Image (cartoon, rainbow, N blue to C red; front, side, top):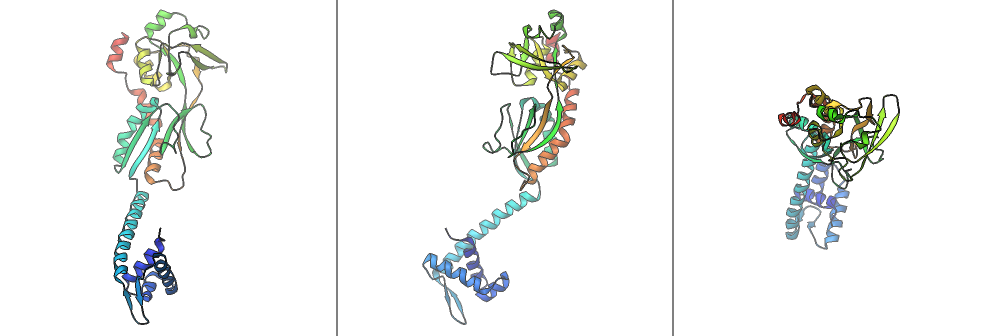
Length: 314
């Protein structure tokens, strides 16, 4: 493969009709141009230019080669222009991954983000599995973990913390009677664990006491929305994020179960590979999520469960 510098300098000599004029236009020594053109001719084993002390003539093969060089160099300029445009304003494709439980909040934000940055196209992967950003070509991953990611290859931006609380429908609580931390594991439950028949809840008391509850959930699903509906309809006791608990309490379709107990703090955070060379479109999404996700969670508190849920609970 030829050195692109050789091609560019040869094309400049032809375009400016001489070594001296090309050297002045490019502000490079004439000797440098001569060296590069000579090397190119040697590698191609063909004469591209006929030189004399007073005149320069492009050979027939040199003219054909020059025209191809111009096509190549124009393509390079176009490619560089695409990169420059992408670096100057938020445009292009950005790939985001987020847990299924965050889809309502992200759903609130996507329209506003699109209106602010119409040149950005979002591809969103919703999954509870751990995403490999490099292998799966994900630009930004929204995660909710007990601890922040400690991978040295990732940059972490913390968004906030939340807890999960035990809830059930009023009818189920009345039917079950007195529920204690010791009897909780024998009650009908709903779990985020969709892989195993048995699950363990790590619960913390307000006084600092910790307790592990082993239980066999009636329903296991990675989507909090499904668990919320099942809880509203009296299927079992669920451990739900506080924003879902609050709206259920406010509408009366859910009530607390053992309110002095809660899960460990879950830290919502963004991870991405590097700040160096980050495109404006990726930076725009990161900043937008950091600025607006807490507000989106608050708005989720204000949304009533669907009427069908209310009817099923009555």
